[in-house]
Amino acid sequence: MTAAPRALITGITGMVGSHLAEYLLENTDWEIHGMLRWRSPLDNLAGLTDRINRKDRVHLVYGDLRDELAVRHVVETSRPDYVFHLAAQSFPRTSFDSPLDTLDTNVQGTVRVLEALRRASPEAFIHVCSSSEVFGRVPREKLPINEDCSFHPASPYAISKVGTDLVGRYYAEAYGMRVLVTRMFTHTGPRRGDVFAESTFAKQIALIERGAVEPVVKVGNLDSLRTVADVRDAVRAYHMLLTVDPRPGAVYNIGGTHSCTVGRILQDLIDLSPRRDEIRVEVDPDRLRPIDADLQVPDTGRFQAHTGWQPRIPYERTIKDLLNYWRDRVAREDGRLLVR
Image (cartoon, rainbow, N blue to C red):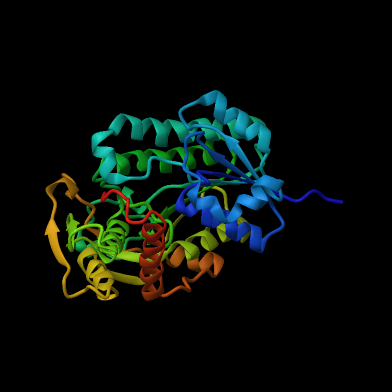
């Protein structure tokens, strides 16, 4: 009997990593190995706890992108056929406060992963997750953004993702490794971290509904234009990336079809609340970036033409599911959550 393929997901405890693990379990026969730090919260893996405990196709391996020996151990333990490199310091606002940590984790961390794979699993198909943030401040006349648009990163996080992007392509070209790079535009849904704009809005609204805070939503820049995709569509795209005629060295934009301002997302979330008429909006200077990537609208034609992928989940369901996720979290914690 032929052994089932083995997949390695770095950052399995994140929003995307946990959804990807669930998708692969449901839609493939693969064995899933997930890399996480020893201190990573396990909340997002709650639905997989039983399988993890029974070692039923899900195996956790501890590692940190800043620890070369640990990364090597993860790769040698998992010996993957498919790799989804999702782990990162992924918060743009945080990167202004911790630029060196962001660069080390994201750029050198990716080098550590690819070097370990070059030695232990050189035939693996590897997804390196870059970001639409690499495009940064794009002139309006260049919308929608295609893969050939020049980089103009607007945060240390975005700069780190430029490095990640280039490192991925370098390993494909220099060593013939099967590396493919994606630049995912805004994607959200259940389990989205509360340091991201639309998720902190939903969290604050859930806290307001619970009576835990005053009916004020604190915000940053509401004028940025975003195209929103659902995380569950994103992980389906990532699976297709490595299984539908994968082309090493390829780079793809991936994203949704619903474009609106951050302010519109906020209003749509408020409109879902029974306390909508009471809620006020207040700009918090601490939530403003020094500069912002303010026009993020993708051209995803290259990826769609190659794989046939299309987003399926409508924007309205995405934001409703996000708000309900936070309502459930706030109820479980009885409102005892920090506003971030």
